[in-house]
Amino acid sequence: MKTYCKQNLEEIKNLVAQLSNEQYTYASKLLSEATIGQHVRHILEFYQSVFNGLDSKIVNYDHRKRNLSIETDKDFAIQIMDSINTRLALEIADEPLVLEGNFCAEEGNQIQIKTTLFRELAYCLEHSIHHQALIKVGLLELNCASIIDETFGLAPATIRYKKECAQ
Image 1 (cartoon, helix red, strand yellow):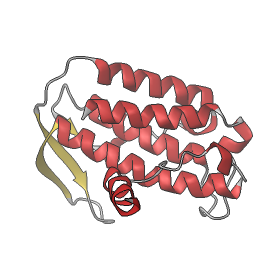
Image 2 (tube, one colour):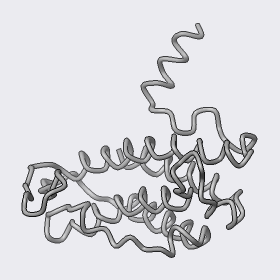
Image 3 (cartoon, one colour):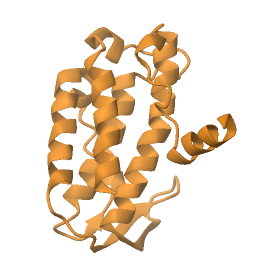
Image 4 (cartoon, one colour):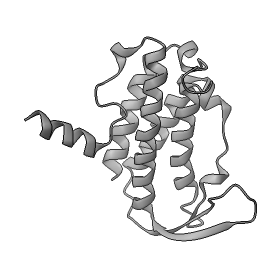
């Protein structure tokens, strides 16, 4: 799982490295004024939430820092991707964790769910791919189709399915 997460973050990093900071922070009309940087920040802060929860054994995505530097400074975002990939490269075993969160709009409805480290990394990967699909929309609005890999923002199952259909 760690390998797939690392590969995915490298894919995002390589794309972000090709953007100007203006493109990275462009408020996309098609994305309700969201920026590529906001989507990248969102992806990275989910991974940070997992690693931040390792000591307490509690992962809570609601407690993300929402660091504006990640969404406004592409070079800083790349540094964060590198630091996450460094953590993913370490020998870490799957271990039991608790996912804590409020999954409704009203306060006071926090629940806890048993999970594991690798399950949460799988969630981070799937979550990342979803946001990559949105990033792709923003890039197309910016006329940046030439830097988008054809599989960017596609789930592995979709890629396998398309290969099967092509045969």
